[in-house]
Amino acid sequence: MIYLILAVLCSVLISVIMRLSTDKVKNNISMLAMNYVMCIFIALLFSGIGNVLTYSNEVFKTIWFGIVNGIFYLMGFVLFQYNVKKNGVVLSSVFMRLGLLVPLIISLLVFQEIPGIIQILGSLLAVVSIIILNLNKKQKLSKSSYLLLFLLLASGAGDAMSKIYEEYGTEELASQFLLYTFFVALLLCIIFAVIKKQKFGKNEIVFGLLIGIPNFFSAKFLLMSLKTVPGIVAYPTYSIATLLIVTLVGVFYFKEKLSPIQWVAVVGIFIAIGLLNI
Image (tube, rainbow, N blue to C red; front, side, top):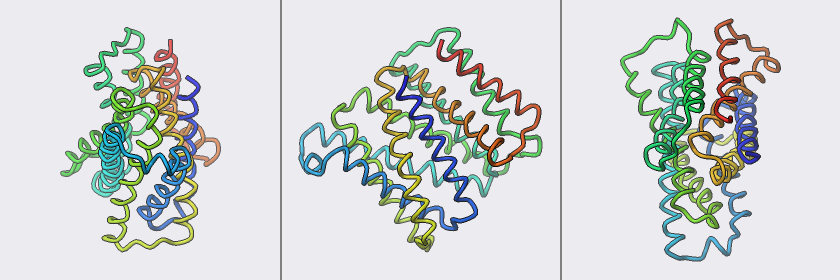
């Protein structure tokens, strides 16, 4: 459980740094690319350059896992940015967070992780709380609302790859799996940056490198937590605990305000975390 807690804290730190960068960073894709540069650097330290240069069937399989995961990583980001323009940040955030349904379903159907009644109630309460905390009455669906489903699937598939690798990959090559993931994401990110003619300014570089540190360790700790915590518990706990802490940081540090119904959702998240871990 300690690794899951560390994964949550790192995920919270990512959100806080991104929140601080909002008014200072103009080119988000450039910042994202620098984030992946830092992730690759840390992954190399954990993997060892000599080990990366070796080849075996297990390494080949790990490379393919990393390629698929890297594609999902960037797809989730690109679809989120596009949905923000078409459907607004609120709905986009909701569907991105609801991506946790994908690894939940995979854990249930593919890996036969059968939850108890209490865990099912916790998962349902988590989903409802996420929707309540993020939605508002003024939000309306657009003609491009179908893209929200693609966002849910892409973000969820990226999360699910950690569980898939934990089951089918090689434990000793976990850092290399993350290395290949971030390397592929970086290549695709650079292509998008060139297409959109985004520049790498000082703020993009600094904030990108800062985000890369918790980003790597969030992925690393989540992968490690799945060795001991069932995916059916780990994923919803990871998602809603992160959302809860980020929300509280927003309220008490950034002075953001919540409506009464959103405070009810916060309480619901507290209860959901408890139910999931009974």
